[in-house]
Length: 248
Image (cartoon, rainbow, N blue to C red; front, top):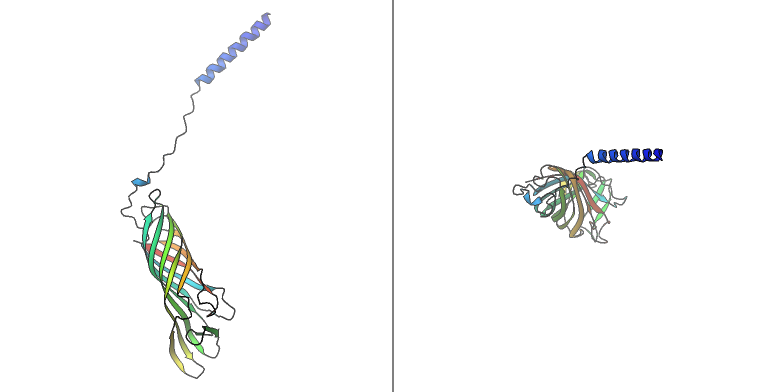
């Protein structure tokens, strides 16, 4: 009986001591709640929002037949002016709506390009005429639309940015220009020009994407519509990849 009483007293002592030790440990502070950013306090009055954009890129045709021999540095040059509409709930995201002019210059070698004669455009191999340079140039009035993201909405000249969208273009110019060293008739050293748009689609729709930092972004575009009218030429689709410079 004495032993049982002793054991009970020891258990009571250790239980009381352990409880007092737990009581002396300070309670952990409650986790801090992250404050939601108040986007309304951002100063967007001096916001530089890529209002003016210049693009220069390397151009090409997708789905080009083997009979077409492009060569040289085919290129695109575009200039746009944008209006920017940031989201009130999160100005890092905005919509850019613009207007501008886009031009493509596709170069060929040892190739005859006739956009005026017959019932369809003629693009075929020509090793008789000696071309120094030959290009097919087109120009479009365009309306681009972008969904944009920027890590620095107050100053888009700084920070990472990304844009995805599309553009619609209306054809306003189409021509072939060639510098000929010598032709089949023996004539030499002259410039040949041919202007006609009847075989081209009068409008085009292209997907666009941009990604970069600050004023410089890499861009890409791919035309979703055919370049030539149906049965008036090969079913090629222009594309471009290049560099954008934006600001203001």
